[in-house]
Length: 379
Image (cartoon, rainbow, N blue to C red):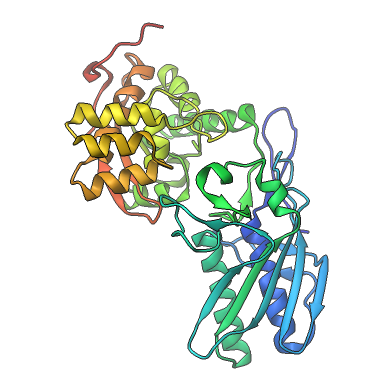
């Protein structure tokens, strides 16, 4: 299988891997190709959202008159991913005329049962980007081979239900198995020191270029929105990810005049609560804090109490929006104050951009300097 490497510290190479969504897309392409041509492409190459074209070796093949199934073993690289080594399978068959591309959950893939997730309740837990990648595969092959793009895709993961017990899925209301995830298709190996090191080097480059404005975003969706608001050269886009604390502490000693922090509502809610590491495995949204925060905003008692027992931060956001409460704007301002607190008296102006999962701008603060913060840093 194709690999992508990064060089972190001291010459050590960390192998990047592929998401379950990338594996499902590759399996779908191979299976549909076999259904149409009666031959499996092995290896099979796909195109990821940012243009990378990894090749995947097939680990399982099944071909019948009206269906084909392919399995690909997930390689997570050097990331300690619970799904590393799992067999991701895609079965394709002809759908009803005019049905388009439809998705089903096979064994080991969960179903969404509660609100607040990017896929609505009652749907297979196959996230939007993998769905789009698979739709593009169907469309491209249908144009190439001249068939109607009405295809039913069933994604399975061998032992997925057992593996899902090691994830947050049960708590989030995803039952029966794993989620098919991925926004870029690539798994970046988890290494705090390596990732923070890369953030520091990005700041160093921006300072050397004498560029006065950088951005740090939690992911590709928020980065895209921020970059639609401001014109950043590539070197000014810091690969912050979840490590907002590592970025801010380095900027405190190595300031750049302006910083825009972009992220989703849930992650920036954690920053607003004072968390400096936004990874779901190392910090969680405190729903009691969110409820008290809404109460301080003057929200009605019903919204406050529903927030205490909410399933996700997204569910709170959607509930607040229905009630006409701008919780995203309030969280943005609190997150800004927390960022300024960490910066202390460093001459860095900060603004916050809150983005929805589908790329909608939810809130945006004006720029503020550390002397404008409402709390002090005792440390």
